[in-house]
Length: 273
Image (cartoon, rainbow, N blue to C red; front, top):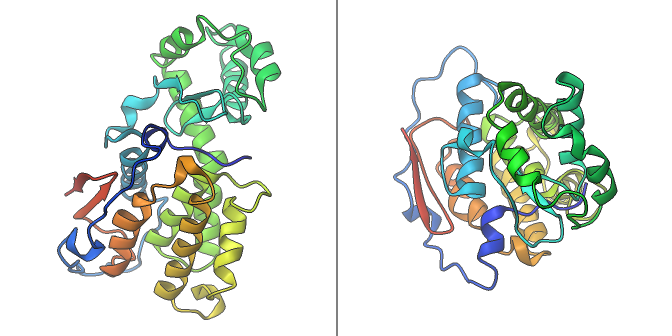
């Protein structure tokens, strides 16, 4: 899958972020008493945190559940971007989502657009979608079945693979989230800036815990590789979702992604208590 743009970065092209040092953004993390076994990102509480963290970067809001109805063309060459994870009409994941919805609920309001979605896949074209596709999407977003489809496709394509790989590499919750945020933005195709190749670039610099490496050292190498990948495309050139968010948690030693969390994205401050 091609690189995935964020919604907010496209609006900020050409702007330069003068980020404050990461250590200044949050008080040092104070670990809480550890339970019998640390949970992973797939724990329901941690997963909710992950959804909010991604939404802060993608939508400048912690209310990720308000994004089912979101749809617009952000002029990044990928057609329409929509929904809770930024499904794109030009990259195939929107097509797969609408196909799933049609399988589960034949004759739904979006089913008639499937031929057009197949034609425009791989391009930024709206041919056969305009003028009413966006209206249909927003209408479908009121249907619990369509919301469930968005959740399921998010998990199948992005969340589950990143958590599985993170656990395989011996990473705790923060590391699993770093993987998830990367695959959301970059996809997991074969191009040099895809998730798998970001990981491969990191492995050239450090070993993950599963290979006997230090977790913090490896995650710094992964985030370095992630920043490199982001800078290869202008729409991703603002790296604050790494520099003033994930890197803050890492420097504070919060490898289990425990709350409270304080971070900034594009200069906006966020907090989860």
